[in-house]
Image 1 (cartoon, rainbow, N blue to C red):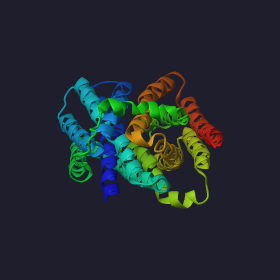
Image 2: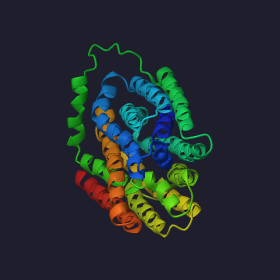
Image 3: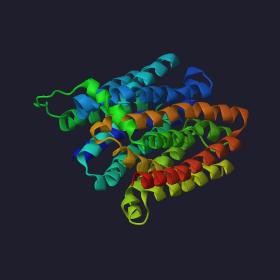
Length: 386
């Protein structure tokens, strides 16, 4: 029951975030701005999401992770409702910025709760199940937002997102909120922030956070530009873009269902290496732009490879500092979303200065190198710690 409601929070967070990618061209037309400018709506959410992590994580450790989830999801709900009525692009950016700050209190705190509730031998599977819920949210967000943009209008999905986050906020407030502590030593925010020292004292911390930063740049830099790529090549519009982007979620969902079987045959470091190869090759093959359907299939393979790396790193993060898990996952999310904020800027620059094929190839090579490099470095770290 607890995992269900934690996962519901992850699903709602994914819906609020990933719904914007297929809408970029619709927003560009609505507000009469270039596509590259409209794509900043994605960065406007990812950047504050990342920057809020170092603040919000310790607050969850000190005063209650479930309580923080409920508050942040309630604020996110309000920004989505307001976003459905906005008539100015700058105001939309502002609302997404505030929503990103609030969203920063969801994913890392939810994963920290899993670390609290599940023993080490069950965490990778529990985190994978949680990720499955977030990926379902991503699939729904990507497909429905593109579909609604071509039928009812892009504003409709903001209402749908608000309904989802409101339900999750209610569940967090009722089921996940911790009881008031009666201990003689009251929680201290200063002490919680001191948990960062414990996190970075673990030699694996820099490797964990560096890996997710680079993998995020490699994969999520391209998603805000899928609509433009498809439209400029006559392969579809927002609806097809949503289907392609949803492929990442579908591949991740398949991974979450297969993870128990995979763990019987592969080590954690092998997950990372294979994830880099599968994801890198899939992203590289997108260069040929055969059709939106085949691109969706390649993005599904990309999502499978991505989760092989990402889930393995998340399991490592859960053990970096057991007394400061929310802080550890906050730095993890900070690194991940800083990559998502920087990625579209880098991809947009490469797309318009070097062309699509060289830019996609560069990101494919980066993803492969991240998977293989992380595998080798984690293996060496484990041997050194023995």
